[in-house]
Image (cartoon, rainbow, N blue to C red):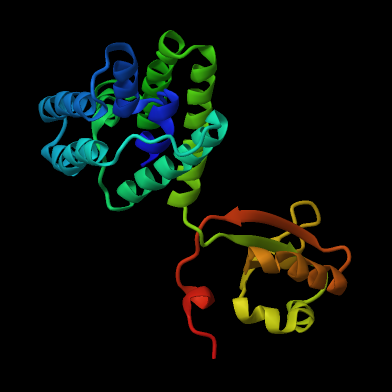
Length: 259
């Protein structure tokens, strides 16, 4: 859907085997699914030669299903605005790839060379994939012009950001580390029912004053974070709080039914 509805109708090749196929379609009129299939077969052969059998099996199904779906789904220009097409297409593409990664699968194609580079040259796979995608995107200059190249690079950035967000999960929280001059009991009383989140008390020592104190670690929902901080500040206006984003939380109070 991403390729046939958004990228191909606007001649934007944003990396990967499908990007090569879009360039080939623009230059030589070759069918999109046929070029993708050819690239994927070559990549499967390389994977069989240089990589483990498990890797080949992991990408085998996706390598053939992607060309099949490209052949079944018609190429239709859903939106006329190129920028909007790139944004929506990148979001759909990122969601699809992230779902594949979630089940330890892949659509093959240009994801294979980075794995080979990692194995033999110790080059990180994401870096290798980025280099290949940029090289493929560079081909836009010769088929659709410089603007198409800029759109392609923009698409790679959007896809990367959305994939990172999806892969780290939607269960995002805020983790607070609280160092206060008031007692832990006073803070508990001030927070009241908000302590349904639970807290961890960590013994600590001041670096300069060498004084013993308790450091509280509390994980809260993002939407509850402002109210939570206000209550802590009300209990101790001079409290020291550090806050970090937490990608996902498993177990504990968050995944239990509240009684």
